[in-house]
Image (tube, rainbow over all chains, first blue to last red):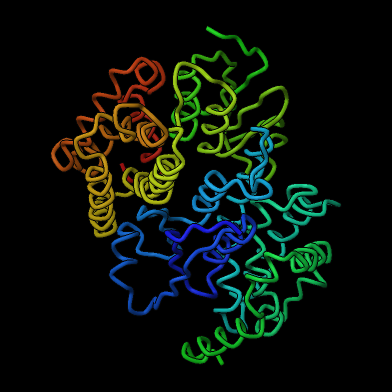
Length: 222
Length: 222
């Protein structure tokens, strides 16, 4: 395993955005220091490293800060050759991967957040309807492929797979079963979980559920 | 001038996203067919080429569709060598350019749209306040540089410069003067306008104003 001792990741364990970066680093077999952040009391280092958005994840490489998860993943891909590339080499295939990773950012992330933040009611029903449509669009794009990039685990897989550790919470809180609604996507999630990098990085869905449950309790939903 | 007769751009003249693509193509001195779209009655070609978002711009290259403006610009940069690169070759500089282009997408675009859609009142005042802050952040990032990428006109310039043809409308509708509030940014806009690609592609601010005025009239603001 290559050593890059000057590599640090400012992160928070459950963040799907942080998980993307950890996945990319695991895929490249690169060592780094994980600096877990308290998002309720942001560190000087975080505020200094990402003064614009003040958000994790931030990758520090030789003291230089790289922000925004998909940008970090592309940076990791460009800097560390590793065993394989996260983005394909063909420009059209690259643009295709970027399009779907961007789709995950624009469509999945917001709805997934809503899914555990809402109590039963009309707003949740609407969110479930929209979420189902978005996941089915992704399932159609996946088709019969092993991964979104075809045979190779790549950018879109890295963008989306962190949210699979929330599937258990979607079932518990919103009675929404990805397995039932999008079986192809659920199978893809299982395939990803069998991958070493994903198994190593993805948090336990029950721990994610416990965190969300505590937050829902604080919000007065549970 | 290189000829790529199979290159087509589905676009709408005033779209800042479309302008980005036209700028990138002009920078690379690539010929293409411009297929102006009617967004009130979307063509079969547009719906087929971008079935997910159903939006312009779409670049068609040898029959393959590339969507989302910043992804299109990166594709153009990767496929057509041209005189110079739109993205720098150094991975950190690339991530830095991607970060600020993404900032323009996340922060400028929505507020700029609000700026001409709102009548006088509290909501407009709030928007102006936020917009000023966003533009000042960009002005600080620009610093004393000629362009956002330093001496080279690049991704961030391409992402932001289309909105400069709206400055005249901001003054007319919201009494917001970029020249007064952000003189450094106004000077950068002037420098960009002197560039051949920008002069060729950017629409006349008065024509933009006329379109917005007509829309505001329809919305009952004027």
